[in-house]
Image 1 (cartoon, rainbow, N blue to C red):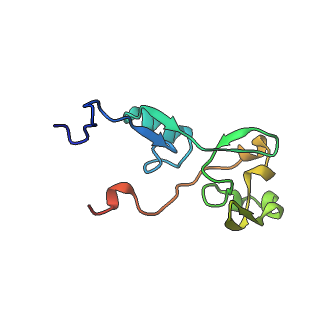
Image 2 (cartoon, rainbow, N blue to C red):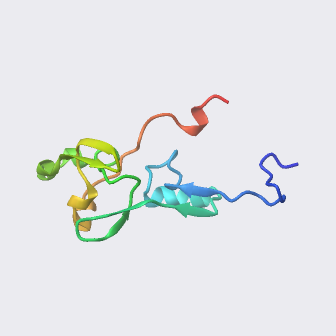
Length: 121
């Protein structure tokens, strides 16, 4: 029997949530492309709106942890604290306060922390 067999014997569906986010910055074209290359059957992105109403692929509305927005002095005045769905985002920047053109000036950064392959089984 296959180690990952399903009840009906079909192979499981592989869904790349945020793309291959353990290997590339999450929600980037590179992460999506690599997930497909590695065999993902589907890509499941999260989306949030920008100031001009464009939906962009992001897990959360805050930009500080996954972009280089902090290194852009022109956006310093947009740093704020918000409570969204009961979660407090302190001193951060939010996609809803940026146009798509402004978002495109930012670079994605790798989220560090435990990787799936580093967890002991």
